Image 1 (cartoon, rainbow, N blue to C red):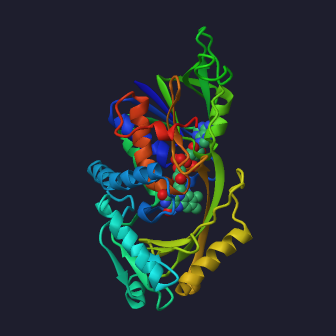
Image 2 (cartoon, rainbow, N blue to C red):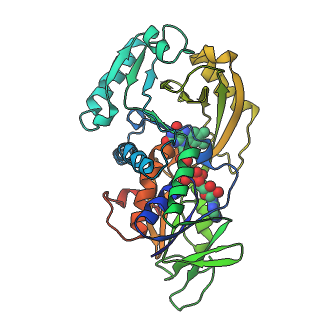
Image 3 (cartoon, protein in one colour):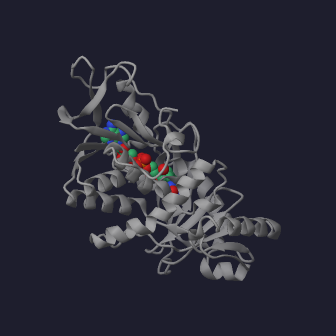
Length: 383
Ligand SMILES: Cc1cc2nc3c(=O)[nH]c(=O)nc-3n(C[C@H](O)[C@H](O)[C@H](O)COP(=O)(O)OP(=O)(O)OC[C@H]3O[C@@H](n4cnc5c(N)ncnc54)[C@H](O)[C@@H]3O)c2cc1C
């Protein structure tokens, strides 16, 4: 079966990897748009603390977190052994001891259904600071052992390499959908909506070349609505800008530092192996396609970071990354068939590095008309 995947962020890369592993002939097309969310994402995998109340979202996010260790092991077997994924744990902070205890209890209760949360226990300020030295002193925390982090850039690149080793072709360029009406006319993107006008997606056009396929997966992140609109398919997904600062801490070994989740602000800190702490992030609704670092955005993330971890103040500001999160009409992914020959996989919002590999794998199976292990109805991309 010939499959085209549009977008090689975490969702499209995972989709191409899964589909090529299942024997499909995959072409992965990416426009290299500035503001790719995957390249900017922090990479925290800890859905169990999220404030989202939607049970469909929660179950999906938990399944996605559970999927990670399996994916990482499979990639390691293919020679992609260092994708930066590590279960470093997380420190959940709160304003007072009562709230900490409530959070601990809630996580403890959730462990029955999701044991991958791991051990959950209260830490004193000194214990927390031992794990994440720049923290302000006397900041007690709940430690969540199962939390992990991953560098989206490295994981997506590894998935694309693995897909290409499975025979996939990766191509740079802006894809436009090609469709054919039931009367047999060819075209690209101008033939009315699926179902009502009876058109079928038959492939994509890239730089004037027509690439035909049996199915297309639209994993174009915040750009998915633009991709689908000319074919008469409407999905509710918009960009939400996120700015995130990277701070170098000289020779410090940050490789095992936990994720820090201050519950009040929605901001967070995490660390990678190269003496790097990442401080995020703005959530700028209505930003449009405008992937700039702004003084206000940078001030917001640094002020929040330094309030929680004043020890970062003497570090080096290395860079600020900007990504456009694909945000749907609610928290749930937009995932599943959206017409004849078309599957949509986007709308993962602020949790796309957590959910992306799982969502991409499901999209691949749906596009290849293989059974998927969840009910896709709550994720209908046309809702
Ligand atoms: C600052 C920030 C922090 C984040 N932190 C976390 C976190 O800690 N944990 C977490 O789980 N998630 C996090 N996220 C969210 C996560 O990064 C995103 O939800 C996820 O990366 C979205 O992946 P995607 O593949 O859907 O889209 P993207 O990564 O944006 O990829 C879409 C791709 O489609 C391509 N494209 C678009 N149009 C076309 C076209 N017509 N033809 C070809 N290609 C096209 C683009 O070039 C792009 O490469 C964060 C996001 C940001 C911005």
